[in-house]
Length: 401
Figure 1 (cartoon, rainbow, N blue to C red):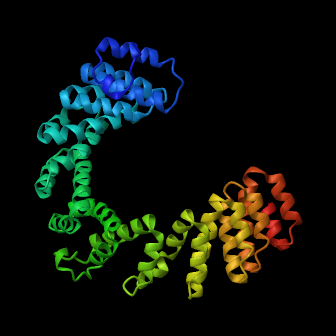
Figure 2 (cartoon, rainbow, N blue to C red):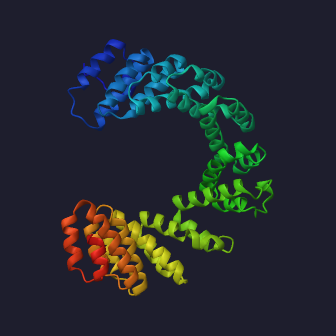
């Protein structure tokens, strides 16, 4: 009779049949079909002999197999014997797989019995595993009573407290940012200071307008409750929120900064926006930068575009810079470009810097590049110094001393 390898059949196999089929599977041609069949076999094995199945999956992951096979087996073991699964996961030799395994065990365990999962954390080894377990346990343990869960987390010892508070606050903010914010600003100053950046970053990724409005103390929405008091905590919230928005959505940040409420912060953040946007789409960022009406803003943005683009694609960045018609913009971009490539290619930076038309900017950019060049290839740098018309005689003599 033909051997069947479908999932339904595999779910009925005995231990001996599982081991036999895994051995046979080793003769198959590697590919998606073999991978999926192996996962079915390991899942069935985990239902019968979880530790052996997890050990097999762990060894396979070390050899390049998908880590999800181990996580699926561990989740099955956890449902049957969470404490044993946790002890095994904590003893794994691979730090990355151990962390993933601990996270899987405790997130699964917490959904079944969060109190027992939370109680077991203190006995878990090593110390790094306790932090992972605490963060994984916290959201399910919090349930819908986040305030109670936060009080529980505050009573935890040392490093566990910070990770657990962060995890619970993150889940609370994901579901109800105003509620999380309202709770936090009623806490002592040290708790506010420790958690305000987490609240800001998570909230702004969910609802930028409300988060930034609340951070500025300008919200008029009743649902946002108490306003954040002006002071260091408020400044930290706003800085973190705006920084997170720029990191996640630079175009959205640019739009907010161009609005009446964001305009006072535009000039100081323009370089960050342009740089981050360039890392995602340099041509879009360049087009936006060139469209800015104020010369000073344009210069800041173009410098950030050139410097960032030079780090990811110096050839394309250099070609784009040379298309700039405005000499001031081009000089600014060339200077930023040279500053970016100088740490690893100071020779090219020095040669490109010669193209800068502003004498003072050209001089300072060439000198900066040449000094770096002298550190690892003094002969080539000296030859450049002696032959370049970009430096006056006194500067050349000073550099050659």
